[in-house]
Length: 152
Length: 83
Image (cartoon, rainbow over all chains, first blue to last red; front, side):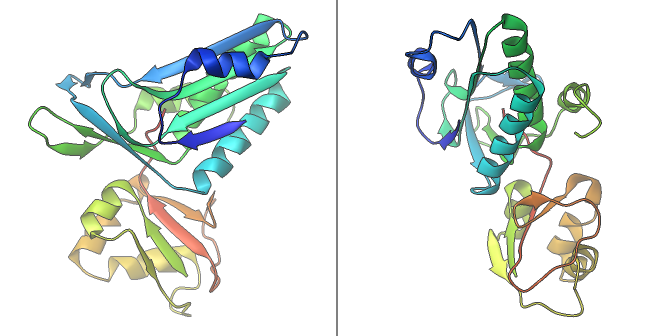
């Protein structure tokens, strides 16, 4: 499942909803990305996320399908927010569920790595003087995505 | 064709989208980019370094030069920074 939304989300509620009534799931892994107050050594006071409606959903669905083809996933959820976000708020949530932990761990890691280099979102940060600037891609994210295949 | 701009491309061009008629001057993405560069200083600057401009046609990343049709949606944007 994928959701692209402006509103904040509740990690616990999402995890419960995903696994409720299921007795075949043995492992659930969740990753939550938060808005930090510093990036590349500069202080950040707020964040705005732009995205490409339509393409975002397509890319996230494609990434989720890829994870399902590589690992034994019984359920998965990707939530990504857009719009204005305050410091400390969650930006992204990935939940994976599998019979055993390794599939859930690896699939969650994979989903985040591919999402960061493929899903059309752009961060715009504000500093303490109110100046806004577009965040640049990180080489570490590109390298992280590459470990999963040549297709990244 | 519908043309979309995102993130700093949008900021620099002061435009989020526009509609261009299909033209034999720009039948594919390579020729469309060349045509964009010739539109003025802001466009020339935005399209000067293609390493930092991604292109999607009909909401899919393209692999190399791609033919364009009247009803296509072409998007230009920088490397993504979500997550």
